[in-house]
Image (cartoon, rainbow, N blue to C red):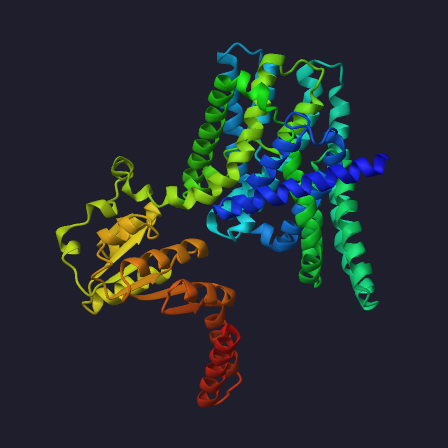
Length: 567
C-alpha cells in the first residue's frame, strides 16, 4: 500500500507540473517557475494532495545531481580552468561582500553576532540548479554573463563546506579547532582523491563498457559514475551539487561526453522537475498571507541587494554593463543550499522563530521569481544605455547624446562591438572615408573608440531606441561583433524590424550558430571557427611547399563544405 501512495504522489506531482507548465509556456513563461508553483499547490501546506515531502525530496536530490552532472558534462575541466577569474575573484567578492552587508543589516536590527553571521551565510548563496537551468534553456551558459554567473556559483558551492563546518563554532559547541582542521583536511583529501581516481579510471571504464555496445549498460554506468562520485564527495562535507558537477567534469574529459549527455537528458528532465516541485512545497500560502508585509520587504531587500552586489562585482572585474546587469539579475535569489544550511542549524537557535517565518518564505519566493527574471532580463539590459546619469558618471556619451553629425549620416556603417575586429573595421572605414558609428556596452571600449576613431557611443545594440538614435533606418550596413550569441540574435531581429532593407553582417564563433542567426534575419554570418580552419590549412600547406593554387582550392573546399553542413 505504501508503494501505491508513493506512486500516487508521483502521478499527482507530474500531472500538475505538466498542466501548469503547459499554461506557463502558452504565455512564454519559464517552465521552472511553473514547477515551483505546482509544488506550492499540491504540497502539504497548499491543497495537501501530497502529504509527505520527504519522499519527494529523495527523488529531488537525484534530480539536482543529474542536472548538475549534465552541466558539468557540457563544460569539462579544461573549460572550467578558463573561468578561474570569475570563480576566484568574482566568487570571493560576491560571497564576501554579501556576508558583510547581511551581517551589518542583521546587527542593526538587533540580532546577536553569531546569528547575524549565519544569516549572511544563508543570503550569500544562490540557486545553482535554478540559475543554470534558466541559462541552459536560453543557451546562455557560455555567454559572457553566463560565464561570470557560473564562476560565482561554483565558488558559492565550494563555500558551503566551510559554512557547514562553522555552525558548531557559531553555536558555541565545545568543538576543538584541531577536529575542524582534521575534518577540513579529510574533505579536501576525499575530493582530490575522487577526482584523481576518476581521471585515471573513468575513461578506461567507459571505453570498456562502450566496447560491449550495450546502450543500457552504458546508461547504467553513467548513472553509477554520476551518483557515486556525488555521494563520495558529499560525504566529505561538500554539497551534492558540487559533487555531481565535478563528476560531470570528469566524464566530460572523455570521448563519450556527447553520448552520455544524450542518454542522460530524459532522466535529468524528469528528476530535475521533481526538485523544482519540492522547492515549492516549502511554501505555506496561509503563513505567507499572515506575514505578507515583512516577507515582501525581506524579499525585495534580498533580491535587490544581491543584484546590486553582483552588478558591482562585475564592474570591479571591468566587465560590460550588460554582463553586470544580467549576472546580477540571475544571482539575486537565495539558493537551495541555503535551505540545507538552515536545516543543519535546526535546534541551535541561530535563526529565531520570528525571522524563520519570514526568511524561508522570502527565500523560496526568490527562487520562484528567478526564472521569470532571467527570461525578461535582456529587456532590462536593453535600457541601460538610456541612463544618462550613469553614462555621465562613467564619462562616456550614450546613444541618447549622438551629435548632429551622426544624426545627419546616410549610408553609414553601424559597428556593434569595439573589440579587435571592430577597431580594425573602424580604422579601415575611416581611412576609406566611409561614415560609421560605433556602439558598445563596455565603458572601456567606448572610451578607447572615442580616442582612436571617434563617433563612439555607450548603448545596447539590442535596443530599438539605440538603433534609432544611431540612424539604423538610414544606414547601409550593420556589423555585429559582440560575443553574446543570444544578444546578437536579438539585435538582428530588432534591426530587421526597424530597417527591413538594412544589410546585416554578423561575426560568430561557432558553425552551429550560423543557422539561428540567418533565421533571425542576418544577411551574412562569418564563423571564426571556419576562418580559423581556412587559415590553419593555408599556413600548414604553405610551409610544405604546396602550390598556391592548390591551397586556394583547399580553402574554397573548406568554405563550401561548411556551407553544405549549414544547409
